[in-house]
Figure: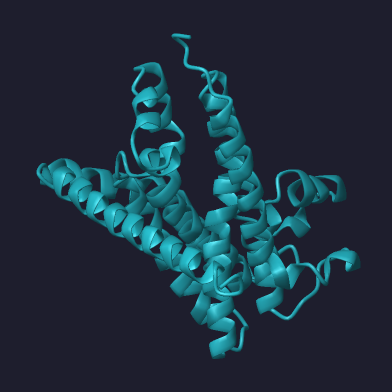
Length: 284
């Protein structure tokens, strides 16, 4: 009996996970249907998301037509970095986008306290409280650029390479969440964290579209070990191009970028959970 004891717990946990997943999918579907009650507004937000990334599309077009590459990267490789980052960011905004503006509203309006009383994790409730339509525009641009890059990049697209590309994009989602979760935890206590989160988002959106090899050595270290942007697309594209990082010590770590992103997310989630256990509302 002792040896089989973990089995019922695993089954019970699997049932709970499946139940929560079904609830999340239903809540998301309801949110989307609710937003589509105003089709003009829905379409505008999608188009706005696409227009917001117009500069990225222009950059991709200029790169393909005017230059052979950037920072020892072929043009297709640079486009692959851009497309992967945009796809990851679009998916992040769909799933985790409420960690910023929506959470700030919940805190300022005093509604976050009610989330502690419901039989569902606070994080899950925050994530499903609103569906970010403009993320569809970001994701659409990312898919477009990534499709252009796949046709241009000097990569042998074997099934393993395609699977690694998908894993890297999912890893990029978790990496952005790993950066934003600690700030969301601080946002429960101070609105100042919202500005910091926006600032980091702007940095990742700007620097993440370029090979880090064009930056000075110090900044490459910052975006590898402090704000680990390198693991979103730069290292995975190096792997797909069959290249090694300039720093030989990282050559063994680059192929594991998706796993590194997931590990950082799990660490951030533990920090989030710790902060929730010590949360005190502004009303005392």
